[in-house]
Image (cartoon, rainbow, N blue to C red):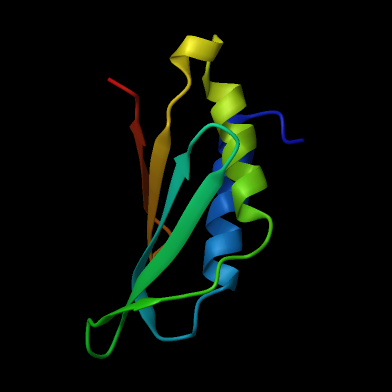
Length: 101
């Protein structure tokens, strides 16, 4: 298990970019945590035409997000329920977290 948020975000970014075709501009992965289920999906925009496409996620992606979730939460009630990791082809990324209301 990675020990820092920085290490995990680097691993998540690497896992995403390794699953993408060569001609991509922006990609994102959305992950949702429910009781005992983690669902995830990946989409990217191609560089030439800007059209959005889905892509198969690597098997490690849910585990990496679960580790990030545990590492960034102080207590069970502080855990976020969804995340969106967006990465640009220049390797800049953002992470948006959603909490239950």
